[in-house]
Amino acid sequence: MKVHEYQAKELFKEYNIPVPQGKVANTPQEAAHAAQDIGTSPIVIKAQIHAGGRGKGGGIKMIHDMHEVGAAASQLLGRRLVTPQTGAEGKPVGALLVEEGLHVQKEAYVGIVIDRSRACPVVLASAEGGVEIERVAAETPEKVFTETVEPGVGLRPFQANRIVFSLGLDPSLARKASKIILNLYRLFIEKDCSLAEINPLVVSKGGLVALDAKLNFDDNALYRHPDISSFRDTSQEDPLEVEASQHRLNYIKLKGNVGCMVNGAGLAMATMDLIKLVGAEPANFLDVGGGATVEMVKYGLQTLISDPDVKVIFINIFGGILRCDTLARGVTEAAKELEINLPMVIRLEGTNVELGRRILADSGLRFTVAEGMGEAAQKVAELLSKRKEGQ
Image (cartoon, rainbow, N blue to C red; front, side, top):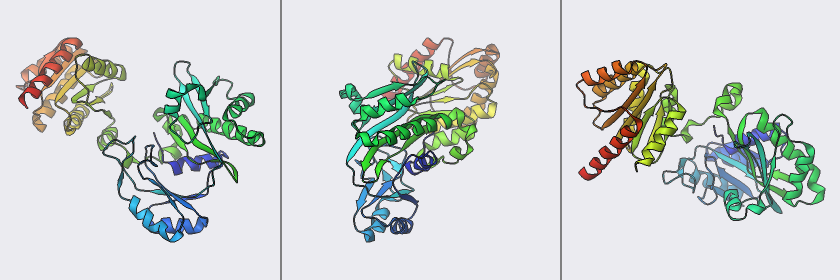
């Protein structure tokens, strides 16, 4: 789960990581009052969306005249901000972070992620802060320092000191920088983060300050953090993904034209690989899980056809706890109720597979049934090709 910058900075403050003085505002009036309360000049207004590149998209404004804060805020609130990371549709701006402007003398980068190949956290650091760290890593990897952390031991002070040395900071700031890095690591572990990032960590008159903050959290651990779960902003998520989650379905939007219904993450990955192997592209994948009911299957199919990009539906189910006959009943009932006009390829295997196939055959509906995954993917590609020819 992603959170906004102002929410991440609230957590930073809990962990004694210094941040600029700031307040969140949801209206131009609140922004003006926040600026007056902060009382410094310049004032920075930052659009709160779940995407980077806000500065390039015009989502960050530096205001030198306090009387212009309300007008600047009104230009951002309520619009959809398009940045290099949002796609052409952009993200809605419902809140602003109003902050004191700092005189920046130097910028650096510090981040923590999980290295899945080594199954441990790794701290990334670079003296090239304030820019796209992905580009720095790709073009000049020698400028990115990495420190691998043994999970059972944690980040040790000598490791934090090595990271500080890599940032090229003035020695007088070393102890404070080391403390910030150790606190960031403690936050990362205690809050079950998947990403914790300060970019940039700046040197200003007040010393070291986290000018920007980014935290992502492991969805599977949110049950341990109801305070963080309350930060969720569904306006920043795909509406179909939000609605599917309310029905205990895992739905992920992609950019192709084949709608995929599966049960299980592994089968989802294999299905998408097959689709791409035959030259097609998945528009999404919807995982109904192992214990899906007829109603969940029906709702899942409704979700798939709600995606205007879907031209062919591919249902690939390995029946275990979810029996094939349950899946078949859900599909046939949904197809009748929703009057689905899209071609549908169904591959069933596992518990009650013969009964499931018989339900499909006796339904009077037109399904393309395949017995193997490869055969099913090939039929998906053929149907997709026919639809393109018919356009």
